[in-house]
Length: 308
Image (cartoon, rainbow, N blue to C red; front, side, top):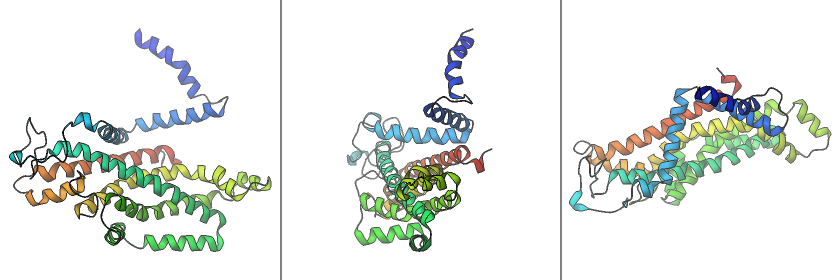
C-alpha cells in the first residue's frame, strides 16, 4: 500500500518531466536531464564510476574529519608499521600515516583535475569552433598549431615544459593543460563543420546576427555534449600524467601527500613493505577507472551515435 501511495504521489512530478508536450523551455530542459539520468543509471559501470568520483569529492571536502591527523607529521618511532587498527594503511619510512596522506592527497588530485578541465574546455572550444566556423586561412593556421602540439606525446611534452620552468603543482597543471586542449579543439572543429551550414545557422546570419553571437548562441551549445564526454574521458589521463610528474619529482613537492610522489617513495620499499606503494597505486587506479566509466556512461547518454 505504501509503495502504491508513493508512486501516486510521485507520478505527477514524473509525468511533468517526461511529458511529450512541454509547456516551457525549463520543462523541456528538466525533462532532458531526467531522461538522461534515467539512461545513465541503467548502466551499472557508469553508476560505479559516478560513485567513485562522488567519493573522491567527498573525501577531499571532508578530509579534516575523515583523517584528522596531519599528513606530513613525522613519527620515527612508528615508521614502516604494517596495516592494522592504529594505522589502516600502515605507515611509511618516516612514520607518516598512509591513510591520512591518501585522504588529504585527494585534494591535490581533485584540484589538478578541476583546474585542467576548467582550462582546456574553454580553450579547446574557442579554437575548434572558430576554426570550423570561419574556415580558410584561419582554420589552417589554428589546425597547424594544434597539429604541432598533437605531434608530441603528452607526457613527453609535459615533462619538457615542467623541466624548463621548474617543478611544482601549478606548473604541472599548466603543462597538462597545454597537452590536453588540442584534442578538444579537434573535436569541436569537427562538430562545427557538421552544423555550420545548418538552416538555423543560415537563418541567424540572414537576421543580421554577428559571427561572435552565432558562435556563442548556436554553435557552442551543440558542441558542449561532445566536449563534456571528451573532457571526462581525458581526466583519467590527466590523473596519470599528474601522478607521473609527481613520481619523477616534477609535480607537487614533498612533503605534499601527492599520490604519484608517494608511489615514487614506496618503490624503494616495495619488496619488504608492500603497503607503502600499493595503496597510493590503488587510489590512482580506482579514480582513473571511475572517470573512464563515467565518460563511457555520458557518451551513451549524450551522443546519439553511441546510444544503445
